[in-house]
Structures are given as structure tokens and as C-alpha cells.
Length: 407
Ligand code: OVM
Image (cartoon, rainbow, N blue to C red):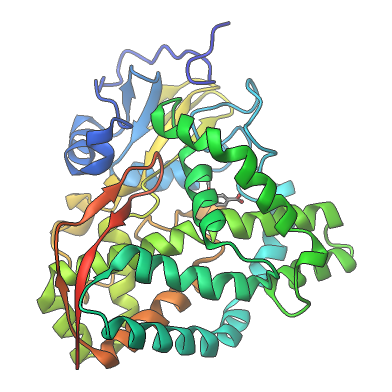
């Protein structure tokens, strides 16, 4: 059988509407909103011939499909490749690309290592790092919100929280981009990522070894779970790899996107400064409004249905989280960025048993950055056009020229 993008060819049920777009075309990745609305308008589930996949983008069906881990599994990969039919580019993640019961055991270890209690012990360092960084940035006439702030902050605090002895910000940021581009089709973005993968992945693998980690970080907590017999030492190394896969590029993107939202909506920055209880709700709104992880897929593991339409075993389903987060049927006025919206139920961290296990640490990082900035920065002004950096799964900025005006 000839595979299509590493999965089985799909003949969709005749009742399913066809949407003839390339969701991974550069112009779509750079400006996804028209695709999001076309996807929602076409139906509750659509067929995309270009990749022979189904796709969901309405809030209800996206949430439903994404949470239904029995019918729509992760163990066959969360990208276009079906791991049952094609060898994945790296050993599968033992928390992301796995189903219960295997998932349950590893998830428990990661949940404990990333618990609110553990994140509280990191907050003093997050705040001190944000203060030093923002003080430095306030002395500059112009900054790049991406390199100077969004990348600088997580690549300082996160490796320290993990307990990494060797840190290479470039390898960490690049590995994230590789991992997320890898879930897309065999396009230029994925090919460029794969060309760099051997070198960057080797660096990452070496950095996950127990003797490369201090004994007081969340990396050590994972190895302690191996000492306690909850996982094997090999599994501990794989779970540390998951920290480094999902913990850097995502928070870099969250901070960059927050700066984009707040620099383009000065009234919302004013509102935040006037009421700092809005800092956490503001970050949730940034996540809803920009969906840093815009798309993940699932694989139907048996003949099933979406919104009453038949879905055959082996079908890949694109779950377009960015479209669900902009569904007017759910949000009323999704195009408005409002720091007081409190968008409970947004899909930016996913949903169900695979919902982001690092969300507490992500919120902690953003709280540190935004609370320090709210104290020290009067205005965040655009100093040029924002440039997006296309990625098959991440909606991130490449450049964001800003001027920070001190209080
Ligand atoms: C992992 C992982 C977890 C979440 C996201 C992700 C594709 C990777 O465990 O490696 O990015």
C-alpha cells in the first residue's frame, strides 16, 4: 500500500464536506485566521484532500475529539505519520505519543515533578531573573521582543529548573522547532528541521543523562521516581527529553505572543497595570487569542464517528486548536483581545488526559514576566512590523521590534 504523508489513504464518507486547502501552506501558517473560519464554516468535520485527512475546528468537536483518547489515540503519533505504518523520526515520547495504561504511569511521574508545589519553589528565581532582564531591556532604545525577551527568559530559568549542567539556548530553542515541525507534512519546513535533527537531537539526548543534571531540579525528581521503582532509568532519561522537547519553544512562544498582544492593544496593557489580578487571566487570553500550539492530530484506532459522520480506523484527524479558540459560537467576540475575558475552557493546553502537564510552570513563567513588567514598564510600543516564524504546529514570532518605556 502506498502511504500518504506516512498514513493510510482515506476515502471519506460521502456525507463529509470537502475543504480544498493546504493548512500547512506558508501563507496559512503566517496568517491562519481565514483558514480557521473556512474550516469551522465548512462543517463539524471536513475532509482535506491534499493530505487525505479529516479536520475539526469548531470548539465542540475539537474538544470532543481531542479528549476522546479511546477512539482517537496518540500512540500512532500526533502528526501526519501513522507510527503503526511508518518509523518515527525519533524514539516516540513516552508521555505524548502513548496511550493508557502506559501513559498513566509516566504521566503521574511528570505531574508530580511539575506540580503547583514544585513550581512555587521556582517562583523566586523566576521573579529575580525577570527583574534583572527587564532592567537591562529598559536601558535599550529598542529591543527585539523575541530574541531579547521571549527567548532570553525561558532559556535562562527553565534549564536551571530542570537542573541542566550544560546549557545551549540555541540547541534548546532549535530542538523545540524541530519537534513541532516534525508533526507536519513532508514540506520545506519539516525537511529543514530534519536536516538539523541529528546534531541537535544528539545534544539533547546527552543532556538528559543523570550525570548531566544537578540533584535539586525537576530532572532529578524524575530520576528519583526511577530510584523508587515507578519507572526505569531509561524511562527517566526519556521523560527529561520530554521536558526539553515541550518546555522551551512553547513558553518562548507564549511570552513573545503576549508581547505582541499587549503592544498591539495598549488599552489592555493599561488595564493590566491598573489591576494586577488580571495578570493570569491575561495570559489565558493570550493563549486563546494566539494558540501557540495551533494543531495536533489524533488517529482513529477503530471505526468510529465524529458529529454523526463515520470515521474509519486509521484515519488521521487534524485537531485545529487555533480554530476552536476563535470559534464565535463559543466565544462571542473571539477577535477581541480582552485581558478580563477569563477564557475558561480554551484549547491552547489541549484537553483530556494529554492536556499540557507543564501548564503550571508555563503560567509561573508568564506571571513572573508580566508582574515585573507591570511594575516597571509604562508602555510597550511597537517599533516596527512583527514578523512570524512559520512552523507546522507552532504559531510563533520571528521578530518583534519593541520600545519599552519605563514607569
Ligand atoms: C514530548 C512532547 C510533549 C508535548 C509536546 C511535544 C511535539 C513533545 O514528550 O516529547 O511537542
